Length: 244
Figure (cartoon, rainbow, N blue to C red):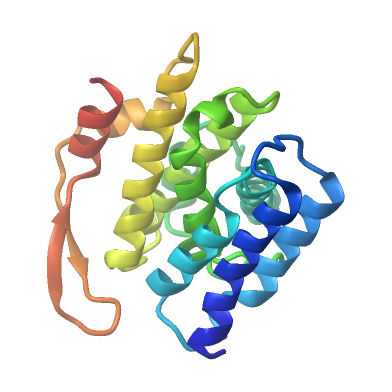
């Protein structure tokens, strides 16, 4: 897909904002679903643009009104639900319990017997594109996100995806490149912003607390080559963002 098509998605978001009116704050479920389906088809691994370029264009398309925020929340919800279902179906035949509040015990018990399938979910939502964009939009509209009726499940899903992201490089041998580290950093930042916008911050989940007790630094690779281009310390990043 040409870059003009990606930019067209961003323009579509702006035009939707003007059509609905700047002050209108109620979402329409049908329009929300149509927006999710549009960014699902418009972006992804089949597009001839980097994941970062696509995520930026997708975020621009989703940002700016209640419809876009509702679509971002729907993307996060669908991705977390699909990832959980995939791990459950992998673990169930082996009698392994799956606690989606903390996937780390499952990965340890499976002894590398699980597949990390976040790149190939049936809903065609890419973690570095639509999901990354949705997380960014939720972070920039944290106050509105914290006021949604589903704000607690939404925050839980954000932490769940963060858990799965870190598990990829720690247990499933997924190479931590700049796209993966960027998603993890965006999830940390967004969970901080949403929690801070809540009148009563919920406790941090167990996997976050476990990681915050550690100080492991990982190499971050260039997505297009074998070279290390940076470093990422998830425990340190979580401590600084979520304990401040």
